[in-house]
Image (tube, rainbow, N blue to C red; front, side, top):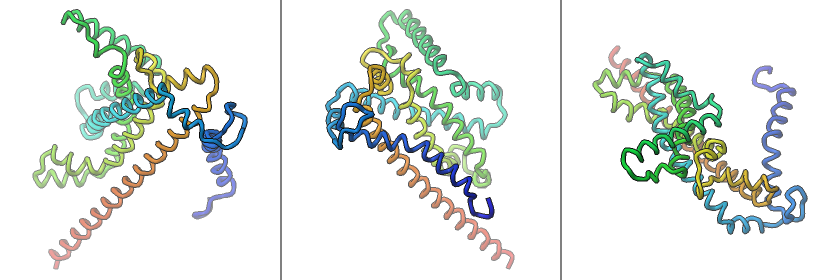
Length: 296
């Protein structure tokens, strides 16, 4: 690369990389409007499969369940991940620091099969203990929404903690130290100064959590019960019986929804970052002006 110009080789690699990533998605979207029932044979333009999907109660119920689990587990993971990331980034030395960091990162490196199986065994054990202690059935621990929520929260929290911790590590602590010198309490510093500065990272972590939850098959297969199949499980079972044009339609809708969310989130994060940069520049200019007045 010479100056700001990109070499022809790098341009070619960039084009090939983008083509490798996006051409399959474009083909999938195009074939969602295919009139033929054979997903690999073009039979003309049609939107009938969109209507078929809207009348497919199994897929709609699974999609609604997956969205609920993704939203709830991502929100819980953001709260827990933010607290864990703050502890690891700001409270650098405390008893059990290494163990805590290892436990947080374990779900990222642990195979999903092991995570799902271990959580299933834990839930069964807890349910058995509570039933023995209370003498009644613990139905809320039956495999379903709540158990999948616990599994996805555990998985998403590990990734969100890494995102939040990385953002806090590169954050300038001078503002927090200045607020502390002026008498602000740690809780107020966190909510007034730190939290707005890491808001883009929190939003990124939330979107990452939704993506991980909607994409999970293995953990959900261990923790789901009758009538609580998530969308990936339904898609997997449908694909095993043969390709269905409705799957193309479903994937197209997911691509549209996720793409819209990413664009909207990036817009607000960029707007927030620009606002914070302007405020910091204004504060810096005011400080410089005050110093000039004092020196004069």
